[in-house]
Length: 173
Image 1: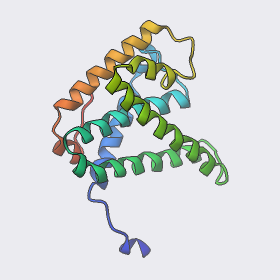
Image 2: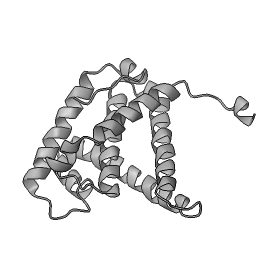
Image 3: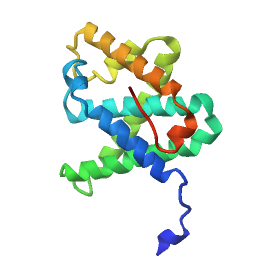
């Protein structure tokens, strides 16, 4: 009943579709076999954050004013799903907020780190510290390969029209 008075986000369905596509892309086996992303909760979470960063970054390039509410809705969708995931993993009601705070802090750090890395051409360093942070023995050649993959995905996203993304259509390849 109280939901009747809540303002509905016009991008809710589109964001759900974009998030689902990002999540689906992070589940591709190649990220864990060819690109050496740790196949752990943290590795998968960091790969998802990298995808979310690429989407947010794309939206802000062409349409910073219009993208604000879309990007906020994408953030909300991401952490709504993370909350559910933690509960499914067996984290109790008392532990979920603590984990969510850590994850949100990680989100913020990754977004700023990747934004700086793209601007300063230091993406491999940011990937080493974030995506491969729990796997310090990762071969530098693998990190460079992943950097190229990220830059390829960025190019694909740059070719997509913002209005298509805002309507729920997105591709990473």
